[in-house]
Image (cartoon, rainbow, N blue to C red; front, side, top):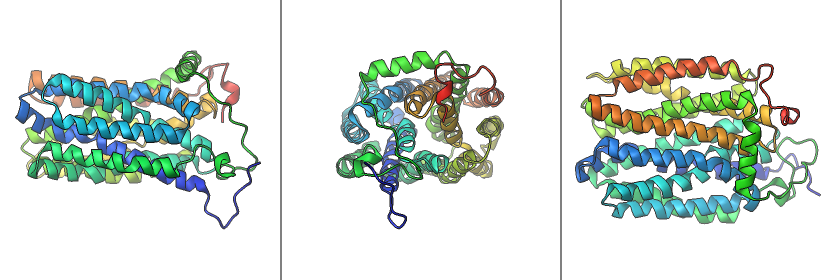
Length: 426
């Protein structure tokens, strides 16, 4: 029978949260690589940005579509095994890209192998860990884990940009492959699946957690959860708003801001510094968002996040100037908002679908996020190739964010929750 932790003893849940943070951080560093790889790949192989964007889009789609199945796999074989295996796959897949010489090589390795591996340890990992290990501080911890994406960007992007400029893109990807390879055995040794594994209750729990039921076939479990979720209007609203989130962040800014800066004569290292600065402010914004989601209406938070993001994207094309002051202003403003949408979205998902299903259902909602990212990654590359600049891509993304802001206010209204899961709301 697990016991509540002693007041003067560090709860193992905080160690699990720290390991999860580092894993998400390394995965974020890997996902940020296309931004610094695009220009050197274009120069070395003569591939167009539209061609490179196809591989990035495949990566983003698989990164999202893996999420609900990854959550079910975690229920089946455990979080520890899933994390260690995914990191090993990422290390091998990223390292193998150093030998690519054809566009289809990049689609296979970066699109399929790396996309699938990174999707297994996406934000759904954070949602699963938080729902299992924390009764208290859920919003705050989810905010910190979400900020790992920004932290990874902050740590890895400047290093990769420097390596690209002074050594080459292959040395840059070797850096992130090594990080994944080193972390995998650490996770295997110290990660734990549930509090009961170390004889504890979740952080802040006042009673013993229910006995965990071993999941069946992960694919079947994920599909059944999707069918149930599709009966809920809230599912479509959450998926729709998160589609726009992915479109406006990973797909557009994460993939194309550095090439857009390059088009305006801004050096790649300085452009990578802008993304890293966004990562710094994103850490602050996302952590604050987690704290706010424990205290304020998550729907209203999403309204403000998407609305302000939309206005900043509409402004972006005018920010490119010789003094780059406007770009730094954009980096601060957009950085505070980048992943701030995650904590309130996770909380609304748990309220709509219940604690036990929160991981899988957020996985499907996160899949829509990555489909949006893939659409933006390809379409922005196509617009740049066809029209010669990114203006239309920035404005269109900004307008969709304004639509998402209005949609956010409709979540949780009467009739929003599916009857089958309404009673399970956390």
